[in-house]
Amino acid sequence: MRFHYAFQNIVNLKGNEKTQAEWILSNAIAKLQEEENSLQEFENMRHEMTNQLQLEIENSAPAVKVQAIQTYVEHLEQCIIRKHADVRKANVAVRKSQSHLTDKMLDEKVWTKSREKAKNKFQHETLLREQNELDEIATVRFAMNLR
Image (cartoon, rainbow, N blue to C red; front, side, top):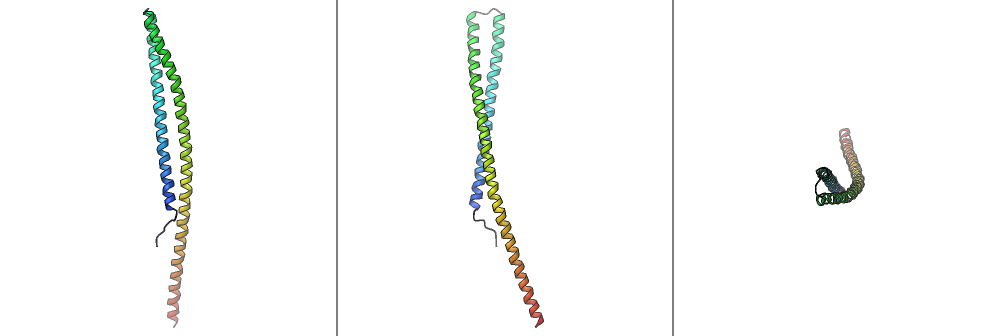
């Protein structure tokens, strides 16, 4: 006789939900890293353009060229501000995904524990039945030997 858990489909579903939550968290972390890398690129470009602007000013470059570089630096500043907001949003998404995964892990653990308890109960009952059968066989043999 083998163990059959009536709610095995729910246990499987909870496992799948946990796996799905892990994927969502993985995607959220990847998005956060992408946003952070993009922010770093903007900051690097701003640093390079600021250095170039100072060189152009020191070399007495035409005012139009200096103004164009300054405008581009200001544009990069705005991009950096927007990118900081994107990074914050990505951080919020990661924290939300972590919380969701924690909930799903707990849910799966509850159902897995329930399955384990049911299996332990089944095994205990099976052992008791087997022991009772062995006791009955021993009693019958003993009674037959007395006759």
